[in-house]
Amino acid sequence: MTVTPILQPVDARSTQSQTTPGIEAPWVAAMLAFVALFAHPISLLARDWWTNPEAGHGLLLFPVACWFVWRIGLSPTRRPHRGLGLGILIASVLLRYLSGLAAELFTMRLSALGALVGLTTFAFGLGQVRRWWLPFLLLLLSIPLPEIVIQTLSAPLQLRASRLGAYLLTTRHVQVRLDGNVIQLRGQQLFVTEACSGLRSLTALLSLGVLTSALWLRLTISRAFVVLATIPVAIFLNGVRVFLTGFLVYFVDPKMGRGFMHLSEGWLMFLVAFLVLGLVTWVVSRIENYRAPEVDSA
Image (cartoon, rainbow, N blue to C red; front, side, top):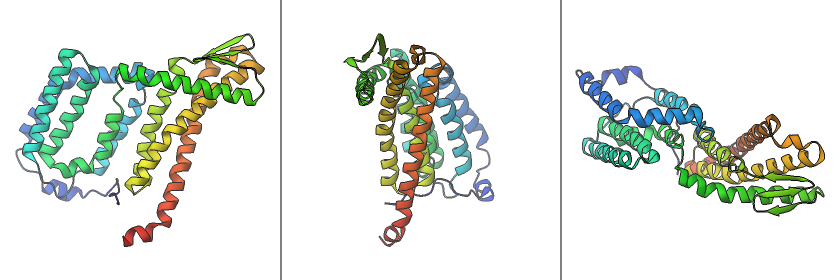
């Protein structure tokens, strides 16, 4: 199965020629209604992007998604789906109301994205939604997960990183005793906290996997493989980070396990993970190019 390339040239003249006169007033009314309904969850989302380290990748994903919307542009053959678009809008507004009553931020923010999809479907049709699938997916990934999901995912990731880090330390002949997510060293303890679970780097790396696979790969199965490959890469490199911290604490200085050095290790491991992801994408793209004649003939 082949997928249409993401970036396609936009004919500005054809777009302008299909603009219906007199639609400015309905669009202004729709935008005002959207702002009135979703200004609160969007402002809270922007605040989380700025203040919450777990959601900081949204500061990158949002402008990138906006750039893709502008770069891809509108389809020259647009067929609005009024009924479906109106149904999505009504469902999104209802979700916004119910999530507001329950004070549930994730679904409240999700309703804003659903309203954007509904407006796009109502005005331009499902074809335009498919054309903008990457910006919509990036916006979805920029919404922080609910706290209960974060807590559920962090615990097993902490334990996995602790076990992997402890195992790698034993390969360097370091005496280690593992107690849950606490690594006992000689006179030192390494506590793998929730912040060190790797969930933050996993979320950011998944977003980068979606972006790189969409830009450089053509087949759906290839893109899915690259995105799924980010999970073991992030988990393994987070275990390596725990090992590196324990190694420096044991052989160099206990202060290496906290402060700037600990933070810089996290950035270094994320950079390595991004390079590994780029290498995986390059290898998959080479396989695609090698099999291109067979795919085209099929």
